[in-house]
Image (cartoon, rainbow, N blue to C red; front, side, top):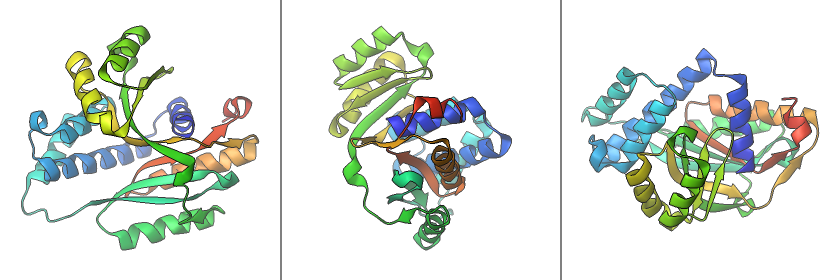
Amino acid sequence: MSGHSQFKNIMNRKGAQDKARARIFSKLAREITVAVKAGGADPAANPRLRLAIQSARSENMPKDNIERAISKGSQSADTTNYEEVRYEGYGPGRVAIIVEALTDNRARTAPNLRALFTKRGGSFGDTVLFNFEKIGYLEYSLDVASADAMFEAALEAGADDVQTTESAHEIICKPEDLGAVRDALEAKFATPNVARLDWKPTVETPVTDLETAQKLMNFIEELNEDDDVQRVITNANIAEDILAQL
């Protein structure tokens, strides 16, 4: 998960600014609303909603915000329809980038993203999926269990790999096993912070100079500032000495 984890760790070190936190809350609220529309307002009967609420809580999203998002999804008068869309391309340093969006208007989202890629010297619309494999991905806070306990429980549940980083327990499984692994770990450790289908780089693009790394990080931040963008995944492998300077 090199590109994703590196970016997340850098953002954690920088600390969340008010503007960034408001943007995160907005994206989390959209996911909660979509989850309610898709599977109902009862978290016990709706795994997607249960996970969306847990993700919101892990980001310290206020309870009132969560309840408003659930209420919005429950209202029959709200006719907004969101669809999940994936975009691909290359960014600075020819790093492969996947952008996952939740949008109510493709005609708005695609041109906005194309403009950002073009502005930063990237290419939009190129197929990059051959650099990645699809996986099931779960994440738990470190305080849920020790590294050994999580490793044993995850493998027993059917996971393929477990990595304990400085910020979380990261569990990887086959896409078709995600539901079973999630259910088994949820029964033992409660709802994970993250449980989703994800993309893991199989071919990494080295980033070995500070200028390219800074351009890449700025570009990813700009992508995340778009209201429709939910996640950005890259195959970047930033050298440790460069990472320390960001």
